[in-house]
Image (cartoon, rainbow over all chains, first blue to last red; front, side, top):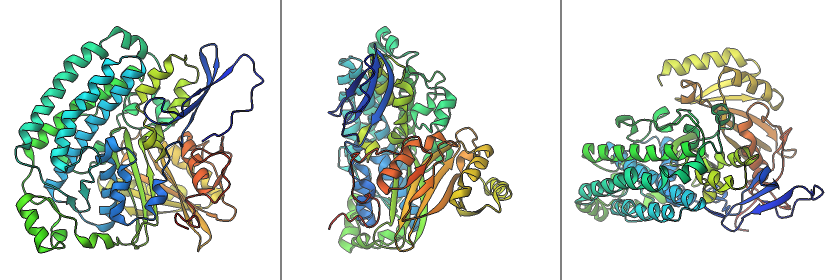
Length: 397
Length: 155
């Protein structure tokens, strides 16, 4: 976070251009560019404006309290943040959730992936001046948020996954409602979105061959997620190191070869299609059985157990507040909506983690601003920013 | 990934890096290499030539009782699909009072922002890093670095 203006004011030809930190697009973030004519000669991302110290706070919270904490990194992608931490914690506790819980976790993660990509589309749309394509994806998130609410009881921050399983089973009549929502979003995506935005000559003119990221550069810079796959790298954690129910589900890795802004958007379009495919498979093949590990079922009071058997809602066992995983070191990785999310946790067998390291996909993609925008025109800045799908709160943590 | 492949990579790495560094297995698909700070760049170059092409995380852990800071680089590969199934931790210990380490920017440019963040929040100075300036904290920040253990949230 820079607090002073730069001291190089001698070059009269170039001017310094500040963008932000008052919410330039997807959150509070500042950029400092040097402009010669309308070309950026240098462009520096300056994050830190929404830093909340999640890693430090985690060292002062009990293991179970960290679940809602890590979700705050990206509330519109809360399920994926949640599963990354819970998988790490389960590795420490050496416990595996039952199959039904694995499927329910995957279901929520994929719903979140779609809503997160739709959010990204909306931001990308308004950034290049398409206010219709700002309103549409934001409104179309609603049916999906509604079905997520049916599963979890919350719209955005679910805290749905707990060590050993999930907190709620599906309600009655869920499948029909979910299929209806998927049908709606599929129709919108494949017809309306292409007609008004993706096939629009204005969109193509702004996006195609702009902000090209070559394959070698993407690997060298350690880019993740759709931005990596748009540069023809077929790396997806769901395939490389399958977790939850992904090993049993059929889907393809979405990728493009061009590496430009348009390719990055098309990868997200294809990912939404794949997510819809995954959710349909889950709805068809959801295994029967418990949603929480047997060992934990015994920990709750008789009243809570009865409620769980009657309603499918599992109340947290009180003993979770004094959870002490054995000492050790774990590294977990999951594919969040924006890319690979890493948790590196050191436990000393205490009530709280000794160190929790969380590396979010947006943080690893931050270098793209400098690499893609230096040398680009000023008008290309919003196009490139929108295509990266960068989310400052997720990056700053 | 089956165990044979991991153990093959393990054997390859073991013959490549010993005696400058030690390798051990943390769990399936997770390996750890420990080395000293002056050998760090050498080992990193060997690993890069073997196929590990990017860094996923730079984790610094503060141990005030032992007066050390442990720095871990989580390394993997995008190009080589066999190696991408492994996350390799390259570990080194540095003196907590001096807090100086060697940057691996020349080996893996992907460490740039990760090392900068570590400098910012943990106060570890990486020699030869292109930009050892604040990233998240205000640039005139003078207090104890927040991720150090002697920085207390509630005083």
